[in-house]
Amino acid sequence: MTQINEQELSTLIEETRAAYNDFAEFNPANCDFAGFAAMSVARFRHALNNPALTRETLELLIRGGMNHSRTQDAKADAWSNFMAAYVSDVVNTNTQN
Image (cartoon, rainbow, N blue to C red; front, side, top):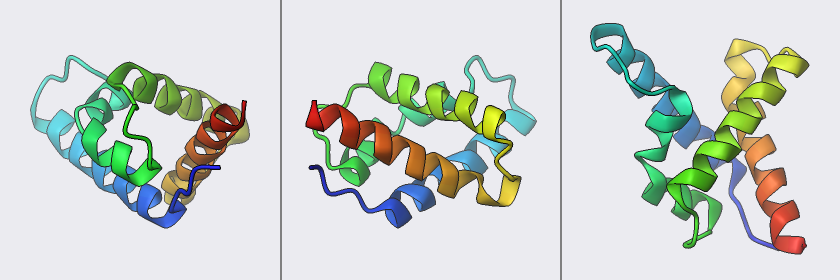
């Protein structure tokens, strides 16, 4: 099983979210949060302990988490923790198969 530090991942997601919100506020963005986060794929590779992670896979993981958070009504202040747990679970499940 891949060792993932969920706190590190949560912090990365929160930092990326804050950067995306700041960027999108003053610039017309041609991407959603998942696309923006994929620009930091190297940091996510490290946080997920997955050197083979691609931008496309990262975008799919994050979009899946975003969709799942909507159905679970994840609160805004706990969103990054929710996303970190979701992404960790999906990555761990995929590495076990």
